[in-house]
Image 1 (spheres, helix red, strand yellow):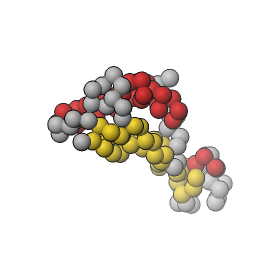
Image 2 (cartoon, helix red, strand yellow):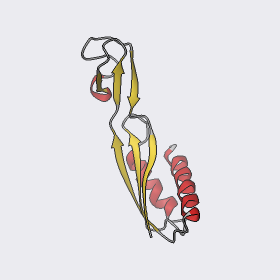
Image 3 (tube, helix red, strand yellow):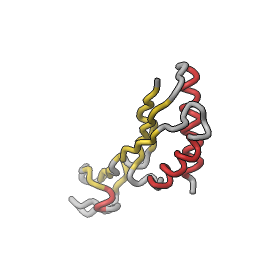
Length: 114
């Protein structure tokens, strides 16, 4: 379960932002997580609740997850398509000369604080 390590890293980053901006309390954090990132959303929320409650700044805060759809581009025909639906093979020209352009990333999108 690498989700706990990710959550620790996110919390560390948010605490640094909180210190820089003199925040007293974080109410919610929104993460963008790629559809094919390998991160399990339910594990993230479980880990968040446990780890965030150990931080004075984040205690009681909510974790919101926005999913970034996975998109692949075909290097042969130039078309973009849904990665999860079609995999590595381009549905337009059947080429396997493709690569992922979105959906593997994870970002802190928003911190709601007071």
